[in-house]
Length: 397
Image (cartoon, rainbow, N blue to C red):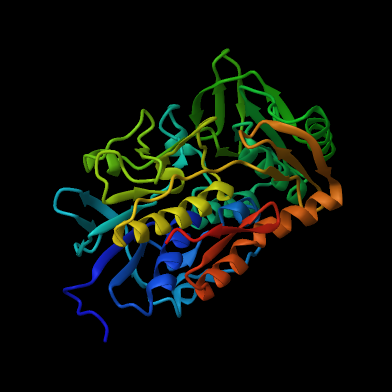
């Protein structure tokens, strides 16, 4: 007989990104026959945002829509659509935008990061971002209405590179300028960087490195050296910031507002709160992890397994993660894949061209069969995509 609602342990998962969705599916699928634990996933949209494909959405290309309730179907997890407006860590409650208050016994905090548009004057008002499907669609509409002119992409990181390449390929009549403090691909092996540089040059992307944006205006970007660039549209990919909600709730956070965790991904100040993905400051031997899908899904799975161990009266195991690769699309027909050491430093192994395109598409599509496998997993293990393969996670129970 199932436990009554009063006896059930309530787990709330905030945010249905790669990490949050992995945690919810893993927890619910493992406990659906027990009835002693109820999992509820809270997210503002009922469709999953493929952040890895938002640069495609931003150039008017259609991508598959994944319905979150359908992804949860059969696991026993519930779904609540709404924006989280407050977390009360003392009362163990979460308030959403329709004024509903949700209670929890254990919280999985996965409210990820967005582009840091507040650091530079005018960026928040006048620049586009790739924070979600609505933002990407707004940029797509803007690009489709431009009749020539210049598009400025602020930020020479991998998001900026992918977006600049996609825009240049899709709209060859536009001049695309990629601005950054560092050169694109600066952390890559010389072979990978050379391919990336050649691809951007082939697509006509004008790269300006060693520059800093001082201000974003409605039709212009001003640089710190006093010069400026006229722009019909500006895309901002410089840095990330996380929601201030964790700090407001009294959780211990780092200087970037991310929840500081112990080795099991529990908040160091509130052990009934687990933090995953971009929302967490997770320290490994090589330093604090940076947010990627590659690392996000494993954090969600590990948080789920840690919760189950604690509920079983056992000590959770420490989380261990090493990076494997950095796949970068360069338009639809080209890509570069930089394989890495566990600390994310580059190895000599690199894929380029069509082989890299195929590899990256395999990795990008990998979460869907992974989620399907999680739903059917016995209690003995789980899988996450790792370099185009599936890596087994041994049971934590």
